[in-house]
View 1 (tube, rainbow, N blue to C red):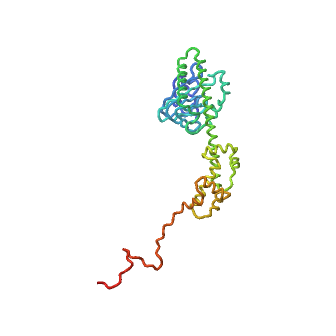
View 2: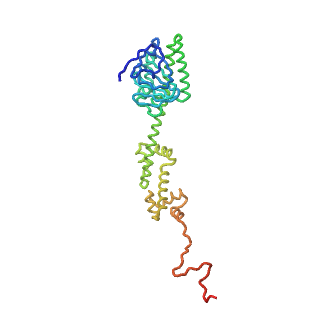
Length: 342
């Protein structure tokens, strides 16, 4: 697709969706008086053509939902989403219903001598470069989502910046640059906190997956001798950490969990037939009948033999007739009367 530069009068309000397909919007399109900072609001319902800018675009999504297509991938975005579109990066909005968002267009020159120091702040590279390429792909597209209160505060401050750029009082460039720097610094802090929460959640998921693997192993090999330390080593956790996380995951200590599972399987075997109780104990991982009885009684309040006897139905009294006996007729009569009929 051929790329063209749009030459239009500077300062004319135009939403990104109005850019011709394949265009690169020049800085002069928005920046009046040579000051490289401009704020624009977008409320639209059209499908825009892919385009790029010669400047950075900071997007603050205020209201509604739509798709943001960037790098050939479409991301759902909604209220609270905040992200950066790099200069030269092709993107477009795909909007089905009216939305509200704020675009802050700027160049590093807007921050002057502060920009190099800003670039050295923690999470700058993550948010400006790595997040757009490798950030979350589900639910919030690129960047991260602000909560309701932080979003409302940011929108109020952006409204003040917008008024300042519109009125342009004496010294407005210094004031606007200071406001922008303050907003971006706070943004990086908020992003850093969100990033740490995301990484903590990822670590938690990895641990849950490892513990689930350990639980599955215990269930599959319940009849064998299972070492808690070896199992902890197999998922790269020290024994104390393994015990703590295992109980948090299952509500039981590892030993208690294993005993409950073994007794449950023993109960299945006791209900299934008349196999020897000692053999059932061995098949369920108990080294001795005495220990099996002890654990069984502790959990169920009775011994394995008592458990089996309790399950068997009592035999009903026999009603069978002796061989050779003649059935007694109805009415309790012992048999037909003898003698002639009168």
